[in-house]
Image (cartoon, rainbow, N blue to C red; front, side, top):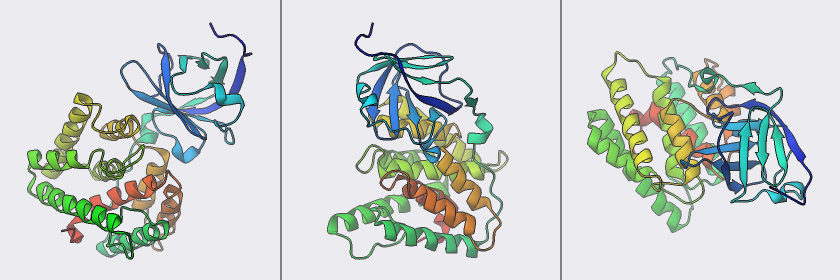
Length: 312
């Protein structure tokens, strides 16, 4: 039993993702950030409470905008704290809680990738350049084209990553499952941070596969087998990458994505000739994490453009 604090509502949920549980045994707080609380169940599955709409994802609850978790009131929620989910809300052992009353349960179709029509090569090239420009403005360590004036460590990261992409392009084109799986394994957990760049890239790449899947095309059957392999490796070894990245990759393998990536995918599929939607979506995803949004955008763009790139 908690003592010393009165029950205080941190806020009200607006939306509940399709993969967030509405009842559970005790959840344990994994990590706390200004706008996100991550929790894990006994199986290590991660869930989130977020206050930024574009940070919402299928295993998250979106709370009222403006709530921050680094204030005095929420200081009693910290890694190792426990919480219980009930139909009416999420209840922390310290007495704080989040109300689910009136929240909308998101249908999985709203978290799924839209189908992309055939995008002309000229448009793909133009959008590659738009992404490159934004990556260079943000000085991301992962860039679609050769970075200029970066430190040796940045150049080394770039060349190692693009060498891996060259191998991946070859194995995917040849539809060699073992080689593709091993190359992807080398990308899982590649890079620093709570969501390594390699994982963010893979989420975007998987998004591009789902946008163009056709069950009657052999290449797409190969993609489905590859996603099963990715899922298998993540389930078999939960230390391949961080818990947060693992959650996003497993959701991606199910065809479920965050609001920011769905926004980007819809913009990619847009027929607007001036790329206005795509630029707006890129700007929005650039605000996700340190560079996570743009790294995922790179993965999606690469999925549609690797046949145009010299990544060796």
